[in-house]
Structure formats: structure tokens, C-alpha cells
Image 1 (cartoon, one colour):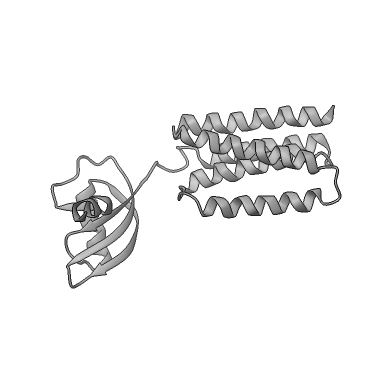
Image 2: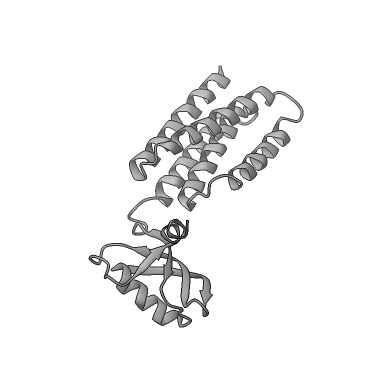
Length: 199
């Protein structure tokens, strides 16, 4: 009976996790990934829970699935957090050798941690973009000012990918908080636009 209660608890927890993700981020294509990995891990750990290698194999499965995730489409950090939360819920729901109240408390802690960590009031929502600027810039302060004027936004972080002094371009990845009005008309192209024009 305890096993069925843990299965029900896992289902409730992962549905709450997926619902939270949809409300805050709206990427419906990620739902099948979160549900699939959770139910898959739950099924394997439940089947192996009574074997002598169940716990070790469960942790190994956690690591293998992490590698698979890292070799697939690049995910944002908050999507990675939801991914690992779904994995953790599946493992907790499938392993029945711990007291049920402890497992339920750990499941609740996982969902609560994601809820609080991803709360919009914790930090303003930001956007990440990769830009190709039409001139080389080596001064970080000047680059920051230029990007803030260009995007009409507050720049949080800049990563310079490449500075080409020959072709007079700078490739940067910028994280910013939108909302300071429209961007200026300074020429700028995304990397995708540049590749499309070159094709």
C-alpha cells in the first residue's frame, strides 16, 4: 500500500511542477520531457527498489540521464532546474526503503525549492541574446553603455565571444532586463541573421 501512495505522491508532485513551469514559462514542448523523465525514472526505480543494487543503480541512472540532457538541446538554467527536480521526484517516488513521511517531505521540499527559486519577485525576468555588433569594441564599459542604448534595457551581464579587429565586428552574449523603451536604430544583427544572409 505504501508503494501506491508514493506513486500517487510522485504524480501529484510532478503535475504541480509541470503546472508551475507552464504558468511561468509557457514552453509546452518541455512538458513531455519533464513528465517522460519523471515517469521513466519512477518506473525503473520502482522495479529495482527491492534489488540489492537498486539505490546504486538509481544514482547511476540519474547521472546517465544528466549526460543525455547535456548532449541534447541547450537549456536555460531554470529549465535545467525543473529537469533535475523531475528526476529527483521520480527517484524519491520509486525508492520505498525510506519512511514515507520523510519521502513526502523531501518531495515537497523539491517542489517548494523550485517554486521559490524561480519566483519572479526574486529577480526580474531577463533575456539572453547573442549579437554581432558592426564594430570591434574592446572597452567593456563602453560596450555595456552601447548595448544598453542599443537594446533600450538594463544590461546585467556581458560575455564577449569574439572580437574581430580585421572585420571590425564583436560577437557578444548579453543578458538584460527589457523595459526601458524601444531599441535604437543602431545597426545590429543576430548571429542567425548573419548566417542566413551568408547562405
